Amino acid sequence: MREFKVKFLKGQGVLGKLLNGYGTIAVSDDEVVLTRSGTSNVLWKTPPVIVTVNPNQIANVVENKELRCLQFSEYPAGKFSGQPDNVFLFKLDFDCEKAQLLELLPKQTSDEVTLETEFMDKLKQLTPYSFFTILIVALCVLVYIAMGVLEGFETCVEPNGIALLRFGADYGPLVAAGEWYRIITCAFVHIGLVHILFNMVILWQIGNFVERLYGNLLFLVVYLGSAAAGSLMSLTASPTIISAGASGAIFGLYGALLAYMVRRHGTIPLHMVSGIRNGAIAFIVFNLMYGMQPGIDNWCHVGGLLGGFFLGVIVAPPFESEERTRQCVIMSILGAAIVAAGSYSCLSSNPTKLDQKDIGNILTEFGIYYNYGNSALHIKKNVNTAANYYKRAVKFDNPVAIYNLGILYRDGDGVENDDAKAFELFKQAADLGDSDAQSEYGRMLYFEKENKKEGVEWLKKASENGSQTARFFLACIYYEGDENVEQNQEFALSELNALADSGFQPAIDLLKKLEEGVETSDSVGEPAQEDDSVPVDNAEPEEN
Image (cartoon, rainbow, N blue to C red; front, side, top):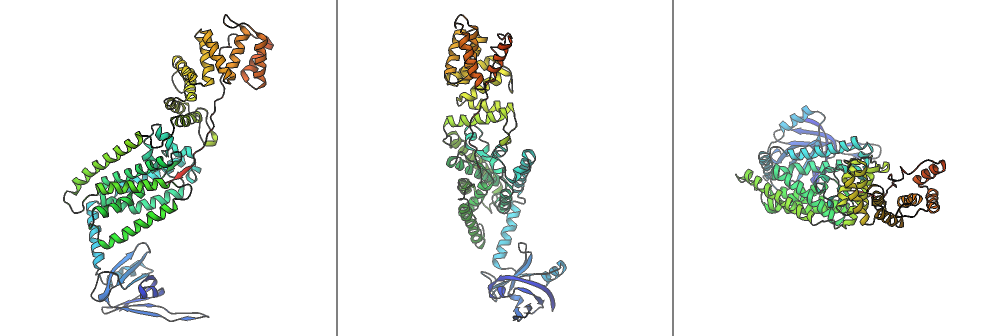
């Protein structure tokens, strides 16, 4: 008889639970004796516990990787199926002793373990490598690292909304404005270290199994389709939040797993189905309940789950068929077509239901952020990006964006200098009622286009609408006078003094020149801009 020192862990069954602590395992041809050593101290004394097991009743001697120990099951005599009487868990100090003990213990397995082993071996033959799971995890980690490097280390802990958007997070107004790619890219962006760690651990666990079950290509279709479905559900229910994370797609994988068991009933061994189904349902219920708290985009979870289940029912491939590979390709094409058509149909109908004016306002806000920079939002000045946002806001007839884009064309800042285009944009914004655009359009008519009468009319309209710039130009015109405007220097000076008292710098500079007797007529028609700003409501990012 060979004896080994072990540490018993709490197992299953009456005897399995009783053996808990240090002891020994002695193995012979006729019996296996498990002894938990007795203990004693000042207060009490615990006698040793001895359990003798017939080797003919031992099965499933394996290494439990989760608990880092060995285990075996004890079955009733002559029956290696169903629930075992006891499961014993134990650790050894040395790997060499572990190998020796494994060699001495019986090699038989229960019917369930035999079926499970055969199923998993077959699964690995059909799909040897789950490389898309590895690739997706790697991409998520790389995006997270890149965000920290490019946006600052603090974004690794608590990213701001702008950083998330720059890396592809989902946001209703931007999707409605044409950035449809965000319904997929948001699944690779994460909000903080805990968020990405939790998602990647779950994705690694479920992804490897589902990818082998569906095949590599179909897995990718299901994953991306689930991500899109989750994003679309989120856009419909909560269009103004910033959403990011892989959990919508992960929910889709659980949905696809349940769908496979429905569509291909009998493929997975029955005892495995019970455990997989219960585990999947537990994950779904717990995380949906957990997702009800603020800061978590639960609608994305629901959408991903439904999308994954729907796709799984349609494309779940056969397991034993000799044509599995060909059918996987066909089903992948079908699945991709369904995802593309469904996404296009939803996005074309504007699932956010946001008003066109609101979309234009938000695009304009982003344009202003990049036009002038915003340290509070960690945005550096980038006029090229600002011009792109303005151009998109122009499609929504936003007068501020149209005017600001006209300024960029006029000055050749971020875009090629084009006075004709600028003039056209100023006219468009002026017609929409923007006072700054009315002022600049009037200035260009009066001083550059030699259309003094219409120029004065637009300047008066802009002045009535509160434009200090227009009021300034009118004062200059009244000071000089022309064939359309009678000279009135007293009125002009009173206007200039009122503007100067309000802090309007061009009026202050002009009055100074007039006091010094400096000729001013050459510079009067130069543009005098006011700072443009739009109040911003910052969207709070939510995890999915």
